[in-house]
Amino acid sequence: MFPGGFPSALASYSRSPGWCYHRRPAAAALSSAMLCLVAACSLLWTPIAAVALHPSMARRSSSVNSRQVPMSAAETLVGYDEFVRTNPMTDRFHVKSFHHVELYCADASSAAGRFAHALGLRAVARSDGSTGNQACTSLCMQSGDVRMVFTAPNVPVERDADACQTPGFDRATALSFLEKHGGLAVRAVCMEVDDAAFAFARCVEGGGTPVLEPRWMTDSRAHENEETPRAGCTVAEVQLYGDVVLRLLSFDDGYSGAHLPGYAQLPVPSSSVEGRYGITRFDHIVGNVWELMPSIRRLKAMTGFHEFAEFTAEDVGTVDSGLNSMVLACNSELVLLPLNEPTYGTRRRSQIETYLIANGGEGVQHIALKTDDIFSTVAAMRSATPTGGFCMMDPPSDDYYTELPARIGDALEPWQFEKAQELGLLVDRDDQGILIQVFTRPVGDRPTLFLEIIQRVGCMVPSDNESQEHLVQKPGCGGFGKGNFKELFKSVELFERSLDGE
Ligand SMILES: [Fe+2]
Image (cartoon, rainbow, N blue to C red; front, top):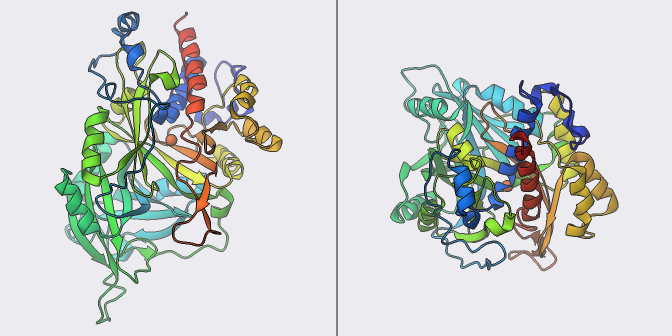
């Protein structure tokens, strides 16, 4: 349970299972929770550039932050309100969409099982000793178009060199990755492209660092008696940031496997919770880096992606722990890659710097998963929490919901508003649509990777490829929750000041 009782500002969902809380004083536990909530929203935040340079803030911060470096993005960010979104269509190769993320872990079955229970993912494909792969165990879990692959190294064997069907897997690299980043961290962000070999060449030509040369994969066991060319895929990897790779994947026409060649397709169970949770696709995948602009310049040169959004100090309007953030997008804007960097000189250590220390360097901070019915999704997730599901962030105060109508107008029906408050959801809108979001606490032992559940409402436009009657939703509809940052950040600062006895 929550030592010392529950702060009155927390709603009923604060009474989540005791194992969600760390065994430490109540104040510290809440501080950690709110810090993560801030981090969760962080992709929109701010730089706090001007504030951080204020002499009084510099004095107060000097004893907190050890890494005093210039804010690399402060000179180039113009802020949310001044930023004019355009789509120059500058991709250097054709990108279709996110395909999967691969997480390295210590035990694939255990990690995959928790995500199945907590998020409604279904096991669709497996690569292990039973498929001739002695090097690792790799499970592909799926809901809608979301595929999460959990890969763990097996015991050392002599004949594993060519047996592993997991792209780019190397036992020594995996063990080093786990030691550095903990027992569960994202190794690969995979995009499906038209031609992975061409995309790899363009990335390297643009200055990208190669990790895995293009490799054609096919399922030799399934086609061993065929004389016709086998269907398969081409996979290649370049560095994304830190030890995370950007995986480029293209399929041959006719490939019909559940995941990649070599993986055995698993039977569809007679009953599945996948539909009850309702996760449909990746919305965005966020990385934390030490310095924003060098990473942005490198990724833009590699991919041709354009700037989709950015956030500055004025967008948050607070004075403490901060960050700079920029979102990159491909031509279709179905792949959204926000990057955060910490800012320095503030009183409290940036939540991004906290992540970078805990993660042992740069990495994926959170994965945003889209649903078409966030009320059902979050209700299902919360019902799984007591039996080992994910712990959700504490909900905002009652004041948040009192003030919400003034900010979002009649964007929600009365029953939706009540449901949002009941489930502790955050709501925001931009000039085009509505955003409803909620965040988990970190999903592993380290305070690093967490998940965001997001529903976007509105922004329906005719599909380019279909008749005018077929509508699709514009990516990024409703923004990224900018309207939630200021209030949440204020709450954190108020609380943290109370810890300091101010
Ligand atoms: Fe997000």
